[in-house]
Length: 138
Image (cartoon, rainbow, N blue to C red; front, side, top):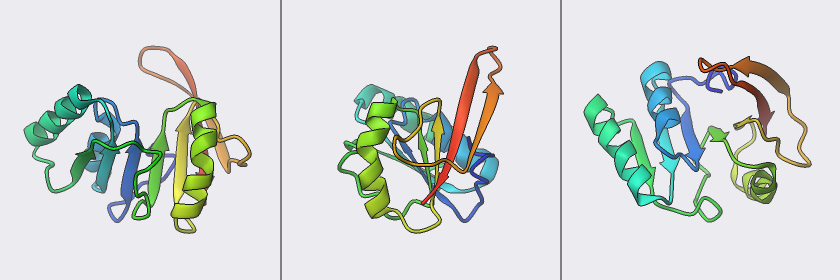
């Protein structure tokens, strides 16, 4: 996802529904960008914050306990989503209204209904699971 979005050190990545924080953490570690995870589940968020501290990434990665349907996304230059198409569809208007022109949106497995992706890529995980990644640009 991060490679397809061509994440750069100057980017600010937002991961909506960030779970255990692996995407924001990897974005900071591997690509040198700043990253924000939006996650309501307090246990997952606490786990992610502990990993950030363990890896010494406190200046690059933070997590917010917010509902991503109401979060301020305007500073993002990259958004990552691993959410169902129905959820992506509800997020579509919010993304369109808040994100600056040129912002990249990368979805794993589920498209944003009504949007045309620029590129899609079939991948296989280390666990031999097939996925499709979709790249959009605002």
